[in-house]
Length: 308
Image 1 (cartoon, rainbow, N blue to C red):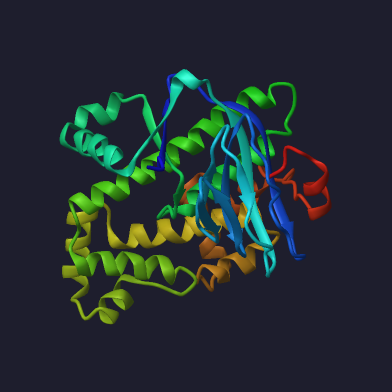
Image 2: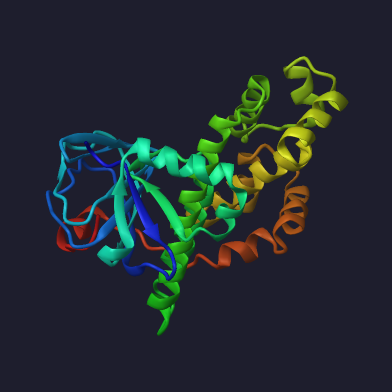
Protein backbone atom coordinates (compact mmCIF):
# COMPACT_ATOMS: atom_id res chain seq x y z
CA UNK A 1 0.00 0.00 0.00
CA UNK A 2 1.31 3.47 -0.88
CA UNK A 3 2.13 5.59 2.19
CA UNK A 4 0.35 8.92 1.89
CA UNK A 5 1.92 10.89 4.75
CA UNK A 6 5.47 11.70 5.74
CA UNK A 7 5.78 12.07 9.51
CA UNK A 8 8.65 14.18 10.81
CA UNK A 9 9.93 14.48 14.36
CA UNK A 10 10.39 18.25 14.39
CA UNK A 11 12.58 18.41 17.51
CA UNK A 12 15.01 20.40 15.37
CA UNK A 13 14.64 22.04 11.93
CA UNK A 14 14.92 20.15 8.68
CA UNK A 15 17.98 21.05 6.60
CA UNK A 16 17.39 23.54 3.80
CA UNK A 17 18.98 22.67 0.43
CA UNK A 18 17.55 24.98 -2.25
CA UNK A 19 14.35 26.60 -3.43
CA UNK A 20 12.90 28.53 -6.35
CA UNK A 21 9.96 29.30 -8.55
CA UNK A 22 9.49 27.80 -12.01
CA UNK A 23 7.61 29.99 -14.48
CA UNK A 24 7.35 29.21 -18.19
CA UNK A 25 4.89 29.67 -21.05
CA UNK A 26 6.51 26.89 -23.09
CA UNK A 27 5.59 23.20 -22.91
CA UNK A 28 7.52 21.64 -20.04
CA UNK A 29 7.91 18.05 -18.94
CA UNK A 30 9.42 17.34 -15.55
CA UNK A 31 12.64 15.28 -15.79
CA UNK A 32 12.83 11.72 -14.48
CA UNK A 33 15.04 11.46 -11.40
CA UNK A 34 15.63 9.87 -8.01
CA UNK A 35 16.92 12.27 -5.37
CA UNK A 36 18.58 11.96 -1.97
CA UNK A 37 16.44 14.84 -0.68
CA UNK A 38 12.73 15.51 -0.22
CA UNK A 39 11.01 18.04 -2.48
CA UNK A 40 7.80 19.97 -1.84
CA UNK A 41 6.00 21.57 -4.79
CA UNK A 42 3.22 24.16 -4.56
CA UNK A 43 1.13 24.83 -7.67
CA UNK A 44 0.56 28.43 -8.77
CA UNK A 45 -0.71 28.18 -12.37
CA UNK A 46 -1.22 25.49 -14.99
CA UNK A 47 -0.83 21.73 -14.56
CA UNK A 48 2.32 19.71 -13.90
CA UNK A 49 1.82 15.94 -14.07
CA UNK A 50 4.29 13.74 -12.19
CA UNK A 51 4.22 9.99 -11.67
CA UNK A 52 5.47 8.61 -8.37
CA UNK A 53 5.06 5.05 -7.11
CA UNK A 54 2.82 4.13 -10.08
CA UNK A 55 0.42 6.98 -9.36
CA UNK A 56 0.05 10.13 -11.46
CA UNK A 57 -0.41 13.41 -9.60
CA UNK A 58 -1.63 16.64 -11.20
CA UNK A 59 -0.08 19.66 -9.50
CA UNK A 60 -2.48 22.54 -10.11
CA UNK A 61 -3.12 25.90 -8.46
CA UNK A 62 -3.45 25.60 -4.70
CA UNK A 63 -2.23 21.99 -4.45
CA UNK A 64 0.93 20.58 -2.89
CA UNK A 65 2.95 17.52 -3.89
CA UNK A 66 5.72 15.86 -1.90
CA UNK A 67 8.39 14.07 -3.95
CA UNK A 68 9.86 11.39 -1.74
CA UNK A 69 13.50 10.83 -0.99
CA UNK A 70 14.97 7.83 -2.78
CA UNK A 71 11.83 7.26 -4.89
CA UNK A 72 11.84 7.79 -8.64
CA UNK A 73 9.51 10.49 -9.95
CA UNK A 74 8.73 10.83 -13.64
CA UNK A 75 7.41 13.71 -15.72
CA UNK A 76 4.19 12.17 -17.04
CA UNK A 77 3.31 14.66 -19.78
CA UNK A 78 4.10 18.12 -21.12
CA UNK A 79 2.30 21.09 -19.62
CA UNK A 80 -0.10 22.58 -22.20
CA UNK A 81 -0.59 26.03 -20.67
CA UNK A 82 1.52 28.64 -18.86
CA UNK A 83 3.05 26.84 -15.90
CA UNK A 84 4.21 28.19 -12.56
CA UNK A 85 5.01 26.51 -9.25
CA UNK A 86 7.21 26.82 -6.18
CA UNK A 87 9.69 24.13 -5.18
CA UNK A 88 12.10 23.50 -2.35
CA UNK A 89 14.50 20.69 -1.44
CA UNK A 90 15.22 19.70 2.12
CA UNK A 91 17.21 16.99 3.87
CA UNK A 92 16.03 14.93 6.82
CA UNK A 93 17.73 12.17 8.75
CA UNK A 94 16.12 8.77 8.21
CA UNK A 95 15.57 8.21 11.94
CA UNK A 96 13.39 11.35 12.11
CA UNK A 97 11.16 10.40 9.18
CA UNK A 98 8.66 7.67 8.38
CA UNK A 99 5.77 7.11 5.98
CA UNK A 100 2.32 6.14 7.16
CA UNK A 101 -0.95 5.20 5.46
CA UNK A 102 -4.11 7.30 5.51
CA UNK A 103 -5.74 4.91 8.01
CA UNK A 104 -2.77 5.11 10.38
CA UNK A 105 -2.67 8.89 10.06
CA UNK A 106 -6.36 9.11 10.93
CA UNK A 107 -5.80 7.02 14.04
CA UNK A 108 -2.98 9.30 15.20
CA UNK A 109 -4.92 12.49 14.50
CA UNK A 110 -8.01 11.12 16.23
CA UNK A 111 -5.89 10.45 19.30
CA UNK A 112 -4.52 14.00 19.22
CA UNK A 113 -8.01 15.49 19.01
CA UNK A 114 -9.27 13.39 21.91
CA UNK A 115 -6.35 14.47 24.09
CA UNK A 116 -5.86 18.22 23.61
CA UNK A 117 -2.67 18.31 25.67
CA UNK A 118 -0.96 16.06 23.12
CA UNK A 119 -1.46 18.72 20.43
CA UNK A 120 0.49 21.24 22.48
CA UNK A 121 3.55 19.08 23.10
CA UNK A 122 3.64 16.67 20.15
CA UNK A 123 6.90 16.93 18.17
CA UNK A 124 5.39 15.09 15.17
CA UNK A 125 4.23 16.89 12.03
CA UNK A 126 2.32 15.33 9.12
CA UNK A 127 3.12 16.14 5.50
CA UNK A 128 0.63 14.74 2.96
CA UNK A 129 2.00 13.38 -0.29
CA UNK A 130 -0.71 15.22 -2.21
CA UNK A 131 -3.15 17.76 -0.83
CA UNK A 132 -5.15 20.93 -1.35
CA UNK A 133 -4.63 22.98 1.83
CA UNK A 134 -7.63 25.16 2.76
CA UNK A 135 -5.44 28.24 3.37
CA UNK A 136 -2.89 27.97 0.59
CA UNK A 137 -2.20 31.72 0.76
CA UNK A 138 -0.50 31.23 4.13
CA UNK A 139 1.89 28.72 2.55
CA UNK A 140 2.54 31.02 -0.41
CA UNK A 141 3.45 33.89 1.93
CA UNK A 142 5.88 31.71 3.88
CA UNK A 143 7.37 30.39 0.65
CA UNK A 144 8.05 33.88 -0.67
CA UNK A 145 9.73 34.72 2.63
CA UNK A 146 11.83 31.59 2.16
CA UNK A 147 12.80 32.62 -1.38
CA UNK A 148 13.90 36.00 -0.11
CA UNK A 149 15.69 34.71 2.98
CA UNK A 150 17.64 32.04 1.08
CA UNK A 151 19.58 34.84 -0.68
CA UNK A 152 20.08 37.06 2.35
CA UNK A 153 23.69 36.52 3.46
CA UNK A 154 26.01 34.46 5.61
CA UNK A 155 23.38 32.84 7.81
CA UNK A 156 20.82 32.41 5.02
CA UNK A 157 20.83 28.61 5.05
CA UNK A 158 20.45 28.38 8.81
CA UNK A 159 17.58 30.87 8.83
CA UNK A 160 16.02 29.20 5.76
CA UNK A 161 16.05 25.84 7.57
CA UNK A 162 13.99 27.29 10.41
CA UNK A 163 11.59 29.08 8.09
CA UNK A 164 11.20 26.00 5.90
CA UNK A 165 10.36 23.96 9.00
CA UNK A 166 7.75 26.59 9.88
CA UNK A 167 6.23 26.16 6.43
CA UNK A 168 6.05 22.38 6.91
CA UNK A 169 4.44 22.90 10.32
CA UNK A 170 1.87 25.22 8.74
CA UNK A 171 1.02 22.55 6.16
CA UNK A 172 0.77 19.96 8.93
CA UNK A 173 -1.47 22.21 11.02
CA UNK A 174 -3.82 22.73 8.08
CA UNK A 175 -3.92 18.95 7.57
CA UNK A 176 -4.81 18.41 11.23
CA UNK A 177 -7.39 21.22 11.24
CA UNK A 178 -9.09 19.80 8.13
CA UNK A 179 -9.37 16.42 9.83
CA UNK A 180 -10.65 18.03 13.04
CA UNK A 181 -13.40 19.82 11.11
CA UNK A 182 -14.46 16.55 9.52
CA UNK A 183 -14.67 14.90 12.94
CA UNK A 184 -16.45 17.87 14.50
CA UNK A 185 -18.26 19.40 11.54
CA UNK A 186 -19.63 22.90 11.54
CA UNK A 187 -23.18 23.59 10.56
CA UNK A 188 -23.42 22.86 6.83
CA UNK A 189 -24.68 26.34 6.01
CA UNK A 190 -21.84 27.96 7.96
CA UNK A 191 -19.29 25.91 6.01
CA UNK A 192 -20.97 27.13 2.82
CA UNK A 193 -20.71 30.75 3.99
CA UNK A 194 -17.02 30.39 4.86
CA UNK A 195 -16.26 28.92 1.45
CA UNK A 196 -18.32 31.64 -0.27
CA UNK A 197 -16.30 34.34 1.53
CA UNK A 198 -13.03 32.73 0.46
CA UNK A 199 -14.03 32.21 -3.17
CA UNK A 200 -15.42 35.74 -3.45
CA UNK A 201 -12.56 37.50 -1.69
CA UNK A 202 -12.14 39.69 -4.78
CA UNK A 203 -15.61 41.21 -4.26
CA UNK A 204 -16.84 43.86 -1.88
CA UNK A 205 -18.17 42.05 1.19
CA UNK A 206 -20.03 43.11 4.32
CA UNK A 207 -21.88 41.38 7.13
CA UNK A 208 -25.12 42.92 5.87
CA UNK A 209 -24.51 41.77 2.29
CA UNK A 210 -23.57 38.22 3.26
CA UNK A 211 -26.60 37.94 5.57
CA UNK A 212 -28.89 39.09 2.77
CA UNK A 213 -27.27 36.68 0.30
CA UNK A 214 -27.89 33.71 2.61
CA UNK A 215 -31.26 35.01 3.89
CA UNK A 216 -30.23 35.56 7.52
CA UNK A 217 -30.72 38.33 9.99
CA UNK A 218 -27.30 40.07 10.25
CA UNK A 219 -27.24 40.05 14.06
CA UNK A 220 -28.24 36.38 14.23
CA UNK A 221 -25.62 35.39 11.65
CA UNK A 222 -22.93 37.36 13.49
CA UNK A 223 -23.76 35.67 16.80
CA UNK A 224 -23.72 32.20 15.24
CA UNK A 225 -20.43 32.88 13.47
CA UNK A 226 -18.79 34.18 16.65
CA UNK A 227 -20.06 31.18 18.61
CA UNK A 228 -18.87 28.55 16.11
CA UNK A 229 -15.69 30.11 14.72
CA UNK A 230 -14.44 32.12 17.66
CA UNK A 231 -14.17 35.45 15.86
CA UNK A 232 -16.61 37.98 14.46
CA UNK A 233 -17.82 37.63 10.89
CA UNK A 234 -16.36 41.04 9.98
CA UNK A 235 -12.98 40.07 11.38
CA UNK A 236 -13.04 36.85 9.36
CA UNK A 237 -13.88 38.79 6.17
CA UNK A 238 -10.96 41.14 6.83
CA UNK A 239 -8.63 38.22 7.60
CA UNK A 240 -9.42 36.49 4.30
CA UNK A 241 -8.91 39.69 2.32
CA UNK A 242 -5.66 40.68 4.04
CA UNK A 243 -4.27 37.17 3.60
CA UNK A 244 -5.03 37.34 -0.13
CA UNK A 245 -3.45 40.81 -0.26
CA UNK A 246 -0.26 39.54 1.43
CA UNK A 247 -0.05 36.75 -1.14
CA UNK A 248 -0.36 39.27 -4.00
CA UNK A 249 2.13 41.68 -2.41
CA UNK A 250 4.75 38.97 -2.04
CA UNK A 251 4.27 37.20 -5.38
CA UNK A 252 3.26 39.89 -7.93
CA UNK A 253 4.21 43.40 -9.01
CA UNK A 254 0.68 44.73 -8.87
CA UNK A 255 0.34 48.24 -7.47
CA UNK A 256 -1.22 48.85 -4.06
CA UNK A 257 -4.26 50.24 -5.86
CA UNK A 258 -4.56 47.13 -8.05
CA UNK A 259 -4.26 44.85 -5.04
CA UNK A 260 -6.88 46.83 -3.15
CA UNK A 261 -9.27 46.36 -6.07
CA UNK A 262 -8.28 42.67 -6.34
CA UNK A 263 -9.65 42.06 -2.85
CA UNK A 264 -12.84 44.02 -3.40
CA UNK A 265 -11.86 47.24 -1.61
CA UNK A 266 -12.47 50.34 -3.74
CA UNK A 267 -10.96 52.79 -1.23
CA UNK A 268 -7.19 52.36 -1.43
CA UNK A 269 -6.61 54.45 1.72
CA UNK A 270 -9.05 52.31 3.69
CA UNK A 271 -7.21 49.20 2.48
CA UNK A 272 -3.89 50.66 3.66
CA UNK A 273 -5.34 51.50 7.09
CA UNK A 274 -6.89 48.04 7.42
CA UNK A 275 -3.64 46.35 6.40
CA UNK A 276 -1.58 48.35 8.90
CA UNK A 277 -4.10 47.70 11.67
CA UNK A 278 -4.00 43.95 10.95
CA UNK A 279 -0.29 43.48 10.22
CA UNK A 280 1.36 46.34 12.08
CA UNK A 281 2.98 47.69 8.89
CA UNK A 282 1.92 49.25 5.60
CA UNK A 283 1.49 47.18 2.39
CA UNK A 284 4.65 48.80 0.98
CA UNK A 285 6.66 47.89 4.07
CA UNK A 286 5.41 44.31 3.84
CA UNK A 287 6.38 44.11 0.16
CA UNK A 288 9.93 45.32 0.80
CA UNK A 289 10.65 42.02 2.53
CA UNK A 290 10.37 40.22 -0.81
CA UNK A 291 12.43 42.31 -3.22
CA UNK A 292 14.87 39.48 -4.00
CA UNK A 293 12.25 37.04 -5.33
CA UNK A 294 13.77 34.82 -8.00
CA UNK A 295 12.05 33.45 -11.08
CA UNK A 296 13.39 30.25 -12.63
CA UNK A 297 12.93 30.20 -16.39
CA UNK A 298 12.69 26.98 -18.34
CA UNK A 299 16.24 27.17 -19.64
CA UNK A 300 17.61 27.30 -16.11
CA UNK A 301 15.41 24.40 -15.08
CA UNK A 302 17.04 22.15 -17.64
CA UNK A 303 20.56 23.28 -16.70
CA UNK A 304 20.39 23.09 -12.88
CA UNK A 305 20.00 19.61 -11.48
CA UNK A 306 18.65 20.99 -8.19
CA UNK A 307 15.67 22.75 -9.71
CA UNK A 308 12.28 21.10 -9.54
